[in-house]
Length: 308
Image (cartoon, rainbow, N blue to C red; front, side):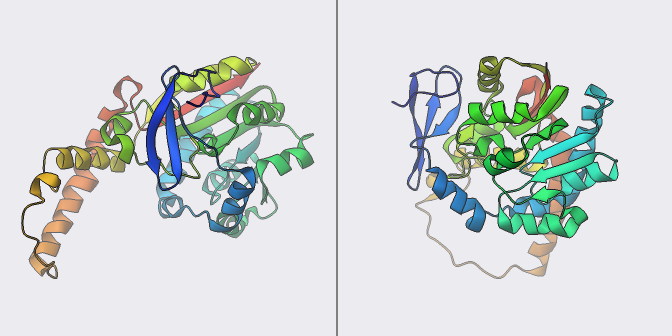
């Protein structure tokens, strides 16, 4: 069995295979990881040409609201800070919100298709279309008061080396923000091998709070100021769909029923679907989603970390 690079344990076991990619899980720190890891040249080519993130573009309003909350918390932890670097800046919504709040912003986005959207948001001179490794080589003399890694660390082949370099760019007293899928979540416990965030080759690692603490324990020059979790309504929907499937609705228990041809949806059925969407997805799901977060079991982890 492969050794876990987060905690150094060899107590790992095979978890699941998706196409040609195999995930293993560490029993010591709980991290999930791809083994063998995709070669760096394959990953570089993937992000330069193939990688897309349609969900990020579709959820612009939601992402901008999240950005406002994160930026307020960053200022709370470092009120004098102004310079912000967003690594993996995606479509630029977070940087755009930070720019509007008078942060001095910079960004790095390796995916070419996504980077083009950031250009359209008045960020052309502020976002570099580079891998972080190349950015670090060229601009490591520049330092920042805030560095944000939103849904990025799970993409990184060597997290320890990466975080070490990121901290080189952070001023003493500066704040590092990390947001990543939470392996110790109700969503993962429900979906298991069908986990929403099990998406190779881009998601090389999946972390719990315990595994991230192992990672930062090795690095040392940091203090975790705040660790929490949150969920979105679609995560609740994912859990409910899994539960329904496991209780027999649409599962193999119904496999002996004769199949019937699908029929065009009538006006009545469309109306019912619209009412269902408005009532459940728009009203009930947001109302009950906070329940997922109780006890730190929300779908997404977020950490605010201070460099000493």
